[in-house]
Image 1 (cartoon, rainbow, N blue to C red):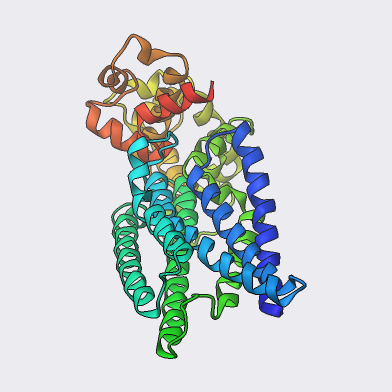
Image 2 (image 1 turned 180 degrees about the vertical axis):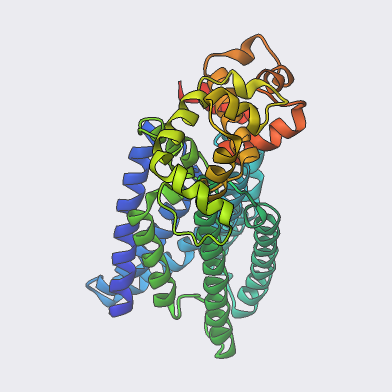
Length: 392
C-alpha cells in the first residue's frame, strides 16, 4: 500500500508541476519542451500504477493491473525524451525539429507490438524475455548517447565570467543528477525483470517501483523549488537585464570589500589611496563602459581607460586585480558583447553582417567575437537574434 501511495503522490505532484510549467511555457517559451513531456509521461505512469491498489473488487484489480502493465509500456518514450532534452539544452535550441520525431519510432512501435500481442493473447515468458532484451539494448544505446553528448558539451564548458560560470555549474549539476537518475532507474528495471524471469513469472517490471517514485519525487520537488533549472542558458540573459536595473550594472563582477592579505609594499600604499574611492572608481568605469565608444577601439589598453578617467594607471591595475572577479581583458570582452547585444536589439543585423558587427564593437575578427559572445551571452549571436525575434 505504501508503495502505491507513493506512486500516487508522485503522479499527482508531477501533473501539478506539468500544469505549472505549461502555464509558464505559454507566457515565456524559453523552456525546453521535452522536459515538460518527460514529466507528464512519467507522472501519468506513476499515477496509474499507484491506483491499482485502490480498485474495489479483485476482478477489477486484476483487469486494471494488467491493462496498466500493458499500456504503461508507452513510457518507453521517456528514453529518447531524456536524450532530446539534453541535446536541446546543450544547443540552446527552442524550436521544434520534425526530424527529432524519428527518435520515437522504436518506443512507439514497441508499445503497439506489446498491445497487439496482449490482445491476441500471444505473450509468453520467452517472448517477453526476447522483447525486453531488445529493449535493454535500446536503453543502453541511448544512455551511452546521453553520456557522450553531456561529456562533450555541457560538462566540458569552461568560462571565466562569474555569472555564466554559476549558471554553467547549476546546469552541470542538474544534468549530472538526471543522468545518474536514468542509470539508477534502468538498473531497477533490469533487476525487477531478471527476478521475474528467474521465477518464470510474467514480466511486469514493477518490482521496487518505490525506488523510482522516490527519485522522481525528489526531482519534482527540486524543480518546484528551483524552476530556473528548466530554462537553460537563457537565464543568463535575464540576469544581465536584471543587473541593468541596479546601481552597478555589472555588480556581480565587482567586490567593493574583498578580504585580501597584501604583502607587496606598493600595493599597501595603493590600498590606502584607493580604498575610500573604490565605489566612485567603479561607478566611473561603468558609466564610461556603457558609452561604448572607448571600448570599440580594438587597440584599447588599460592606460587608455586611465587617461579617459584621469586617474593613474596603477590605480586601475590595483582595482582590476583585487576588486574585480575578471581580468581587464575579460572585462573589455564583456563590455563589447553588451555593445553587440544592444546593436542586435536595435536590428543592426537587418542590414549588416555578423562580421561587420564584430568589428563595430571592437573585435579584430569574427572568430574571437563569436567565441566571446557565446561565453558571455550563453548563445551564439545568430541564436540570440532568433530568440529575440521569437520572443517578439
